[in-house]
Image (cartoon, rainbow, N blue to C red; front, side, top):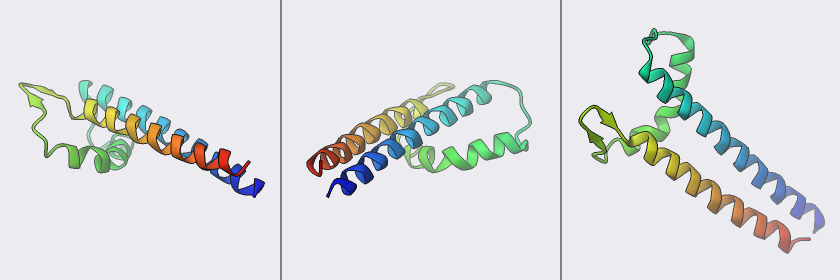
Length: 98
């Protein structure tokens, strides 16, 4: 049973790491959107491919005020909440097995 605790702790760390990477990729996309960069650059294309699945469902919510788009802010909040819930649940399961 001890092995399951370690597995769930590892899963919690993996979820936390993935969410941290998503934070930084989303932050990079926001910064790049302010700069005059080539939209066909491989870096820009990569950022769009990784962050579009997060941002596109949230774009259905009207969060644009003038030229400001608050969708990335909602995405940060959603990633944060998801991270907190999943890591808490996984760590509680892990501690039950130890």
